[in-house]
Image (tube, rainbow, N blue to C red; front, side):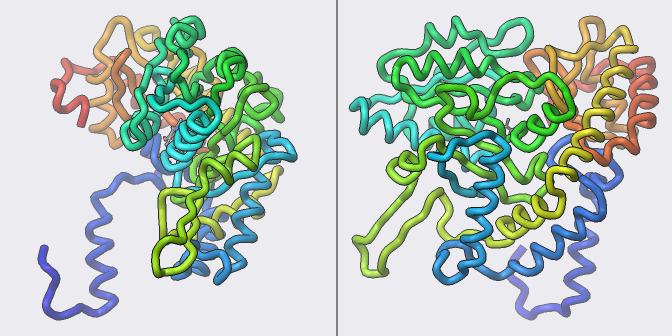
Length: 408
Ligand SMILES: Cc1ncc(COP(=O)(O)O)c(C=O)c1O
């Protein structure tokens, strides 16, 4: 496309954008199992208000828009409260889990350079950890050591111990990881790091806004937050189970001094004046900050608990339905609303193909082959239809359409 010579009327533009959108996944109908976390029309309406109010502002300069600074401080503080961050802690908002993880890795590298003189940094991260860690390793010049998983799809502590050496700047674990929804042995991994003066990051991008409420519902939640000694940083995404529109994550440091010393970027050697920022972005959208503040205050503890109960009950029904199909099995022991299932006897991707034909969007995984589910509160409306189609798919799947179709 080339820039048109003449513009078009607003209505025509909106119509054309709507036309393009028509082919997108039907997430409102509960047909997608990742990417979006629908929580109901009341939450949507609140998010629209907040986004609309801050569509044009720029969060780069907190002195021009003090309201944004205040809301960011509040979001960080409310998130820290949920995750038992101590008084000494500090944090910042970023655009998402990936940026929060890159900041945690950067801070660990800088800290290790300052405190231990490490010039050839390495990090030790579970095989199931999100690719954001590999991205950070590539961007920041750090060697990535991947920890193998045990039969339950959790990081093996003995393998992590084998991989840690004098150049290790960071050990990490997920609470939970994306592929299996299992929580790594955070206390053991964090102890391994702390005993050697190494930073430890809990990736609670997925679990940060759900696990605390699962715990309140009386569900078993393995230790993962700042109550675990040795956890130095933690990421939690408001735009996942915090139900915010995209662009909102929180990176927390146990020590605010580490945030200021190792994460903050500061520059005054140019003609444009003092420049400081806490993450990758320069100009920053303001709407995600307002939306995060808005949704957290709109829902409150009570609202998050209500939504967590819906996720838990829906996940239970889905897991029972899948367990009832002898050809399928769920991998590992998923802790919350994220899990994947495969099969020892049939081609699960062929099952996925039939589900695709019936309008469900299930992500494919390998190692082991699996279909992936991420449950949102609004999925409670589609459980029966999904399970009926899954039963049909297991009975009527044909041979898989081949690798290309599988990984598309
Ligand atoms: C466990 C985990 N960590 C990090 C991320 C990265 O988050 P984002 O996509 O917001 O960058 C994800 C995304 O799904 C995730 O599941």
